[in-house]
Image (cartoon, rainbow, N blue to C red; front, side, top):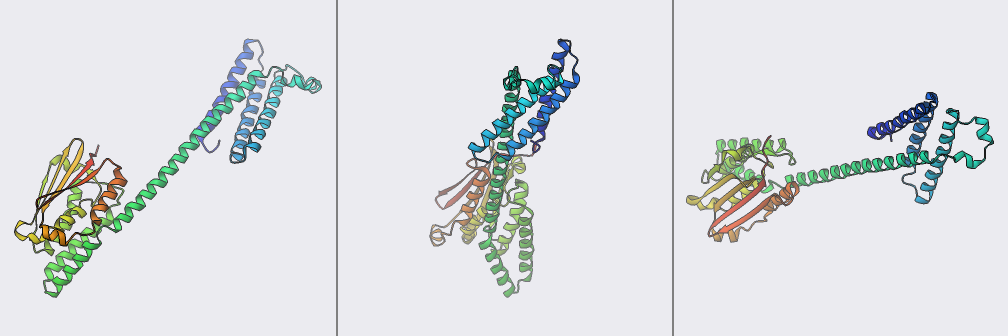
Length: 341
């Protein structure tokens, strides 16, 4: 009982109301035995609190031991309480009570039996409900911890190929004595990596922040491919404040660059973002060469990573689809709309 303050307050309130009605009923019959009402109520309040503690103590014991013990203890409390009340209200003396037959000890106790049963029912129901809530919170906390661990595991898979390629490009730039190019790539790489450390994958960012993160990546890729890639953003102003998981677009953009950088004249990538039907709609499109596609199928790790993150964060409410037309790829991302209040 003491584990839950609400339950303790309800317990005290229940027996306080009983004490008030007990005293009022005696006043109606011309008996001002306030001491009897007070002490009898204090006794049953403390006794049932001890019963509650006993219930908690034997909660995980076997039913064949638990229920007989609780029933016997409850009956003992009832008998003592009923007869103590009679003595305190001067309905019988202690000597008369001790000389009376055992059957007389329970005479007229029916309404007190109902009170004990009512208290026990209310207590057991409230306690079970509160315990269930605690267990559900613990389960939810465990699920969230597991989800965060899965998301962090996905984070470690996010950029290995990209990082490997960038380091190779920096190495080439150094060997060719293009120190400024190498310097700019290192600076942008450090900005991108710093950004990934600043965001937990369980948090979300606005699209305008995501685009800022994406630009670090895009600028590195432009340095790698000698500015041959052109990026075209068409973003609806309302979409800029919509929330999405951080760095969710980077694998999609990396995929688009991977299959289009060699096109030279026709190497352009379009990113279109808008709000449609209470969803954030993002499309990334790029041209590709069919022969190059066959030679560079890839592992699809980036796309699977994105799908896994969406499933963990949104369930089935977020959708990633890939549309392939003649020499044209479009990746469409649909995310439930979330904006700042």
